[in-house]
Image (cartoon, rainbow, N blue to C red; front, side):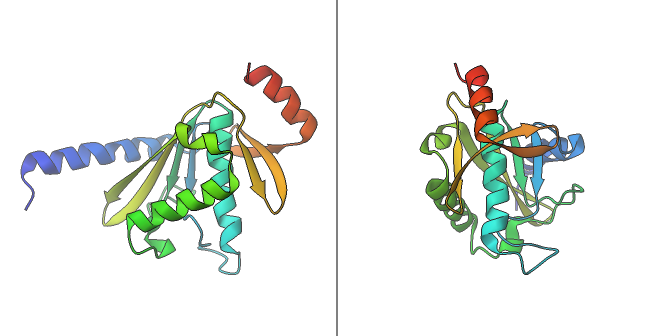
Length: 171
């Protein structure tokens, strides 16, 4: 059994997630239900869902930073990363690392931090993304993409927009 101090520190830790959910999605907060599994449309390939997570990470780093919550639906319900059926948080984190490693500019790892929270028996993965010093690019289906946050969404910029944005943002 946990003593009261341990229970209190766990609920205090979880308050960070509740506070982010309460703020809702915006320029610095994004919710993703899962890492690779579509809840509503099971025929969507895992790579498409994974790309949405990767886009958010790159977009946050390329803009002002932000927080990505995986295991939280768009309406703020905690559904848990268990939906992805990984055997453990370590397996989940290793898969996340492998897909990011394969498709995102390597420097991204110095700008992200991952933490897990157990809330109501479900696990939420928080990825805190810092504002990057260099442009972060994503490879997807043989094409290089540049993403930035714009209000509640992550947008892909065309080459001209990317050039103009990078001139202003990365000096």
